[in-house]
Image (cartoon, rainbow over all chains, first blue to last red; front, side):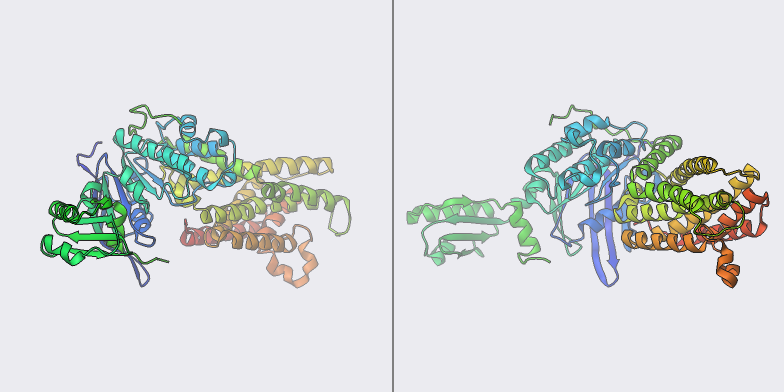
Length: 305
Length: 255
């Protein structure tokens, strides 16, 4: 029976604790059907915990999660949802081809295992046991095991962690093909370029809380932030007097300038006009924040354990 | 690597029939067991080697014909090796490697997974019974007793040892399970009436006879040597089976 709803995944005020530690702290977001959503956050932000609650592996301590309009633990979801855990999950003694065919055999109408192996560059290791595969090969096989049953919704927990560029490209192509064919994908990542490349929506979380969400353009084109390089020692007080009220300019390190303010377009016009009047060429001028800037601004720049 | 033809990945989710899943999972379980060198050593090589050596080399004194004493004991050892030690170790590592957790996210029902594990154990046991019977016959073994009695004893022993194996493998880490299961196997080999008659242990025999290995080896021996189906051995195995399976069902952790 088809469920008439446009929401594939709905997370409302989710709370999950491990003893005294709160891993997810009132998180809410939803994923629309047929879209790719990236759950982005630093290590320990609560990404895997959130996904594992949605996969039915862990019970929530508070709030609610609905997967394809059902409780995450509903057995009816099993054929409809594909799961790729962060690591492990293969019998070490089975060969790559045997493992994929085993997982295919749990489904009535699976993808062709040999074709899937081929597209993920695993044909040469189809007869190699799981334990002898490289980390990247295990990752790709794990991805294949998650999609072989032709699911409606796929959870991918750090699908490209540790992959070389070619393997990452193959994974990205598969995710894009899944979206083209109407499959909903929730992936976790701490790679900005991956989220920027694949995701329709990005959900940034930190310390188990939502810190930002939106499309990549929405997140990166927000408030004005302009970077450029020029000769050291420009008169920044003079610059800010010509800019909209509340704008801030600083030089750090010498010769690298950062100007921040509320109104992006006016800010940019003001900066370039002032530079022109001073006869200064602003080199490498960057008016759009990268997703990485957004991410670091939101989650802090200090290193996490 | 090729580009994807549109529609290749269109959702078409449906679980396979339970029969298909059971066949596929049982095949996987058997492949894993028979491909694993340690498992083959434990379930086939050691029992057959012990049978030949103990029968031909008289360093243990036993009542009656040597081969008639050792075949039932080695059969009990074989059941213990497969249902308890082999299953405990495999399950412990499957948990540690996240295999059981991942299978939990597929349409494969837990009941079908357990049925496949049980079928895998039974097929290996059938192989063991045939090979031990064949080697025993070559050594001059003349069994008595009825087949149904043997089936009943082996089935109860399998249930008891599976329960104990799943209890161990379902609660401890892989390497801990490996050590514990091998230690228990060795102790039960010595104290379970497989290699030495229980009478060698004097008064302790009154306690040792309630060990599952002792009940199974004694039950098979009384049946195959003297056509007696001993109620105490059957009852002992029933109690072990019930206690172990209930404990395993309560304590088992999938990850």
